[in-house]
Amino acid sequence: MLLEEIDGLAKLIDESVGDADEADSGTECHPEQDAVAAPLRWASVSESVGRRSLHADAGESFPGLSRLLGGPSVLIPSTAASLAVHFLSPYRVICNGEPVSGWPNCRGKRIFNYLITHRHRPVPKEVLMDRFWPDVEPDNARNNLNMAIYGLRKLLGGHDGNRSLVVFKDGCYSIRQDVEIWVDAEAFMQDASAGTEFDRRGDVAAAIEAYRRAEAIYQNDYLADEREDDWLLEVRQKFRNVFLAVTDRLSRYYFDDGRFEACLWTSARMLAVDRCDERVHCRMIRAFARLGQHHLAVRQYFACRDALAQELGTTPGVEIVRLFDRVRRRLDV
Image 1 (cartoon, rainbow, N blue to C red):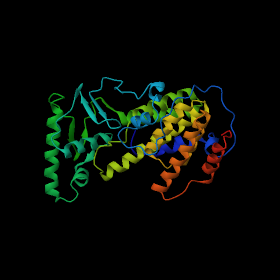
Image 2: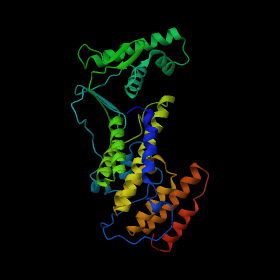
Image 3: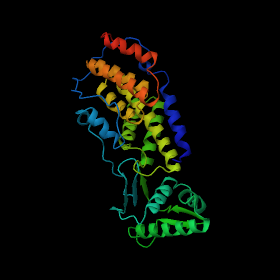
Image 4: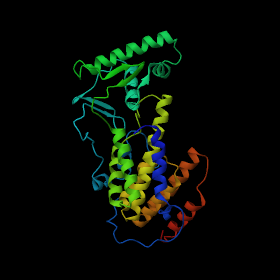
């Protein structure tokens, strides 16, 4: 899937929701559902979570839930790919079954990541020069690029016989097209797209399964530990938008199905990315209340209030304030 398609996918997932999630937009009472499992002992509410691992953050906020849901998946390429690249989990590159280590320099590694990200289109050498040596004279930038590519080819060539994974043709660099490549970010997008298609067909069970696979892949932001290059910030935000759309859809399904623990887990992962989303806070407040954890529902409201004040300098909206009042009075929500 090309990067240009990512924004469209996030929008498509959002549009597929329609008006199905009345819990986020109103203050109506909702009857208790019988299919609620025994409440877990929630230790605390995630008020501010870091970027180490979104799975880990949710797990620490809700101990015991990881075991209930099977925990975060350790993803292994489904095919015997010659090259496997992990961008949405702890960074690693596996070439012909061997982990790639000993990167010759930082620029070579960053160029490799850029070529993999844009691997469906050859990248002109001038683009790489401008991206990675913007303030260097063209001749020097060209020499620097040649040295970085040489080191990259030498490293990857040791894992792939005598044929380099990085090729140069018609003034452009690219990853060899005849190499079988698995990239976790592409698998994430494929599952997110599949979930959207199942949604369109009305196949809820299949949509949930596809969204769960996508959610499991996204363990942290795209190349979370890399420096803040301009191109990377844009790509990272695109994937983040799709992740939020996927988890929003998934948590809605969980809530509607009375699977409140799963709803809380998925919602906590959303707040690890955007802690100011009042819709998610409302959903968590309702889920806590449905589980009989009214004190945690109250705490969730204050977590929302603090996040809005600290990050946006605003106060909670009318809907969540009304919801908070109902929870305090132990009314159905």
